[in-house]
Length: 214
Image (cartoon, rainbow, N blue to C red; front, side, top):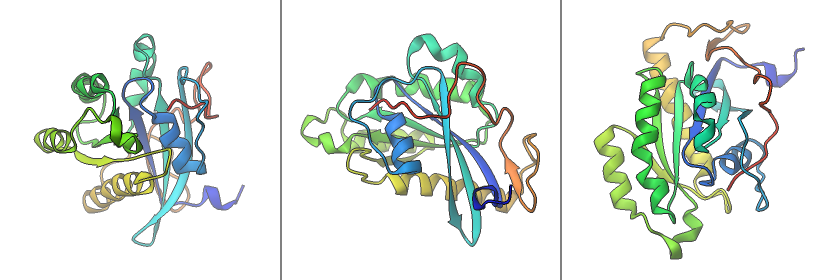
């Protein structure tokens, strides 16, 4: 009780989605713990981690959920879109199929998430530029057409990871502070507003530890 991690003005739930192996878990661990695991295993089920940042003098606590990309887990993870105010839709710049599948993930997100959710398209593994199969301009044009923000990142060398999370959290905060959207149903913390939804702990079979998939 009373530690600094519990002191925040806003709590935002953000989900990471995309095919298995695109690096969602390593983006999460790089942002929340500044760690990267080359020997990472695929995420099973759902896990989350938190980190707080400052925006306009306010403390924003991000609760970031890493949803498994494997097809067999989609029925499990669909429930976790509920209450999310932001989403990072991740693909691997060196694997064209993961980019091709972005449209399917985007449809699923829009089917299950709040219509006002802030979405960022993330081309991960920019360190693999010599293996690139998805042109930056093509992905940027797709993002513009769909009304998404866009960035390329590398969880391996940290390129743009901070920027990606800071940008989406700042965009969410600016929307919320302008419109003062109604609470999504979670308990309001002392002195702050919560924009997330229960459960705040993962159900049985999920974990808040980060076993990562690059």
